[in-house]
Image 1 (cartoon, rainbow, N blue to C red):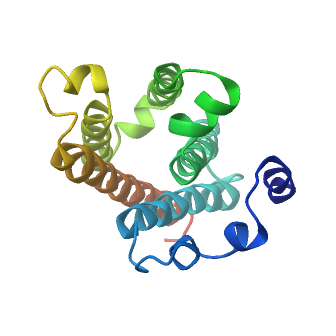
Image 2 (tube, rainbow, N blue to C red; image 1 turned 30 degrees about the vertical axis):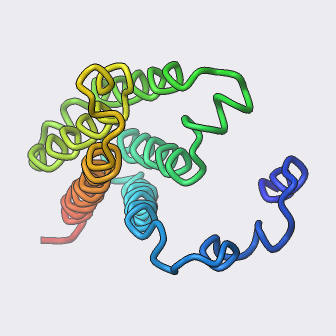
Length: 193
């Protein structure tokens, strides 16, 4: 259904919609490899969260069931944003909502998640989630023009790509590790002793 909607809203042909972008454009197959690996990380974390929710829904507390579902939904939202450039292109251009407001919306959602599940996040694997949050914050700051332009760093490829996207990739990897470790802890409690 989504594919049909996209096909109806774009001038792209079947080749552009179905084929690998690097092949379609004639670029090297490793084009965007870090971004692609980040998408894999988002997808893995979301899958682990949803699977853990499904497996533990009759055995965990209400708070943990809600955590796993919310973690899966939030991670999927971030995956979709990263894959389809929602906050950079789709929402600002398609819906006319400025990028800064979309980013503020993401901050609000992340803050609600963090506050709503603070006890879970502050549990045994707090170092992993704190490190992930720190790298996401660094990436976010480097992607904020009004902070970086006065420092003369907005035009720097090192800041824009290596630091911003590198920090995001590390944040994704740490978030995936946090979700996997916390899921293993939850699933481990189900095993007979």
